Image 1: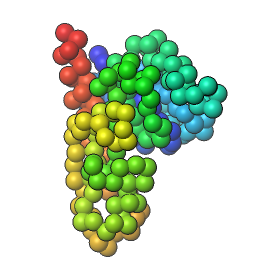
Image 2 (image 1 turned 120 degrees about the vertical axis):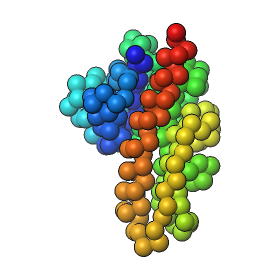
Image 3 (image 1 turned 90 degrees about the horizontal axis):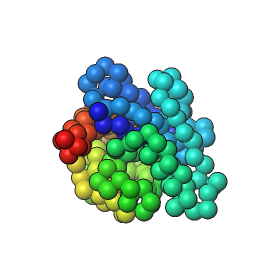
Length: 194
């Protein structure tokens, strides 16, 4: 079975969804650990509630990104992690992790890339008054939301929606899509291992 590590910075609602799919048997991976870069990230509480080991790494406690990622890499190796899943992780992935996990880091982005990259994509789509936005799951590379796209789905925007309503529709699509893509990527890793 493929071991995943989930990286999160915030409340971890997508992480919770991933865990529920693992627990109900629809997602065939093992969540080896959670990596958090914020001490008060609620995702850490969710990990504890589900019996998943969690690790907090303070980026300010290291001499730069390479040292920070090297410390994380030690844990990933110890836990025999095959796939890194970024779930609301608000930090750019550097060379240390990219070179250790080529095409083995996936990210969930709340827009239909290449539209609306960056940290405020739902608000950006809302303010642009576009007819639709979406959700993208992609492999991570050196750029910002530029890695090879694995799967995308569109979300049509009703002009009467406020920003909060749009956010809820985008998040619902994320919850539905992300675990399925993790399953798809994990299957291809399994096949490579055989």
